[in-house]
Image (cartoon, rainbow, N blue to C red; front, side, top):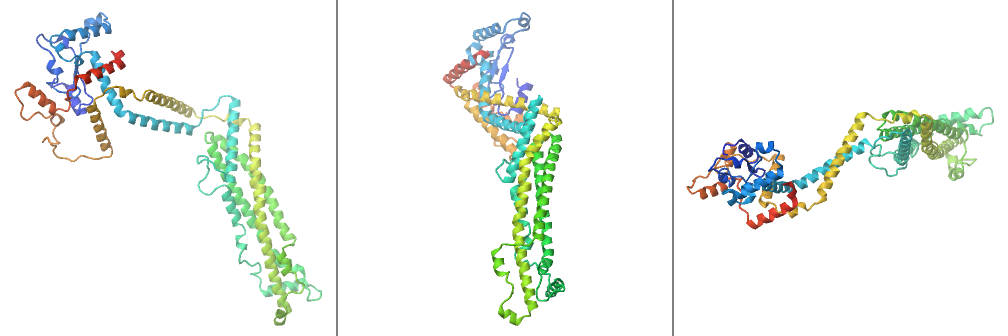
Length: 530
């Protein structure tokens, strides 16, 4: 046995002996006068979990088709009637004893690794569920079901579009962009409009007094001087009012482009499973946006044209301070010429009226864009998409996916079912290992081995050198792990005890009561195995 290839391999792969059980076969055909007692007792090569002797069926028994039940009965009779083996503990012999020992070791390993197994199953299950969620539900087969699926996706797209603009809460998976988006972005465009015309801005800053005097003379014509015409006011104000149209159109275009980009992002998210549908949906949305943009543009032009074409205000401050027929105070008239007084008053009236116009259009332009573009698009986009879906029957025909995706979903579904069944099995009787008296020493060895594995995983390398037994790290595994006693004794019992102390495969003797209790419980639970 000392030269057995199996034992040599076990020493390399299982140096602590926590997974190695010796099985001695063909004990019934040994030479007369010999027996396997020393091997069974571990006196030749000790093992941590010990040995079990079994009597197999012979070739003749197999040829005669002897039943396994009869062979087990003959095996039991052989060991119980043998002059040597009958004097040894019976749990060291027979297939039934081997089954119980293997079951005991198996349950010890299961109990030790079960928490890690459950954790890995749960992690794998979550990963599979995430992959299935990303792939989406299976596609319907009938035309009615496909139409319903398309209807639901359009509803989801329109709902997300409205919620994003309104600033309502939507899940992070449905959110199109990060940061400021939706109504907050549109309101940002509103705040920027005409910002350069407020505050300290003066509409007549580019007009010198000479320019204003020249305008007064031009519009006097051949009439009596001293009576300036209202045409002077319109002539000087008109170039300033014409600057208001371009910022309004830019604001309209900015809002339109943002709504279009938002629709594209949401469509790519909602219809991601059907890329061929994204283009058609964006085309319908773009048409709706362009129609409403053109209508809004026309309304905005009318608003600016009305400010340019008809000058009027009901502003109280302007009516009180800027409508005197004879402008200027008495002191001012004494110090300044009448022309200069008229120039200053005209300058102030132009600045005041232009400020009123800016204040009005700065409110009216965002209201016009918000009502005639943003709100109208939200109201019409869903109806237009449904109408296009009903007219274009080809849209439901493209609801298909690549066969590889279908196969992947099926594989993930089967994997998830297996993981669920595994979880059920593990949760069916969580206290099953508590009814078995297991080997506490073996459990401690397993925990120590797990710790060593964890240390290797985090790359904690042990220090090099010599161990406490005086064996060098460079020595072969058999020399390090099976160091012989330094002073062997002539007494066979002393030699056996010394080998047991120096060999990690050697097990400590157990009390007879504990053995009988363990065997009884294992027999009740796993008696059908034998």
